[in-house]
Image (spheres, rainbow, N blue to C red):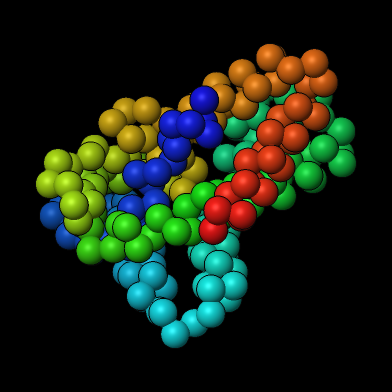
Length: 209
């Protein structure tokens, strides 16, 4: 399950790593996507090392970074899959809030552990005029082994957002979809069971932190 595997763990390395850009395609959107990933990492280094800022404010800054960099609503809908259409409007609103909270509270304290790591951008592939994939290797400061990481970046021409991340070929969106679907199928109240689990996990993480 998602809560045990911490499927998103390696993804947040980008928030506190140095970046090496070895090669990018000579395409405007491709270059922008590589620059977007690099800038995200560089900004996060400053964020992670800003120990003078009180913790609550740093968490809110982190929340802003997540919302600015990731297509949270799109990821949340993909994770819920066909169950999104079955949810009431109130359930959808609550689910989106909990999905965002889970990402924020789960990975905020992972930043310091990854500080000093390295993200090496290798190349960029244009999937279409609006979506590109940034190929990279990611290393933590304590592990010399590189993790193959692909960042799927979408743009409307003015704004770029991360649509998905693949760790060693495994999609974050697909992993969440499988885990959330499993929770719903095992329960007796459908989406309400997932909301309960998300609330429980988020509360537990807040207590731990």
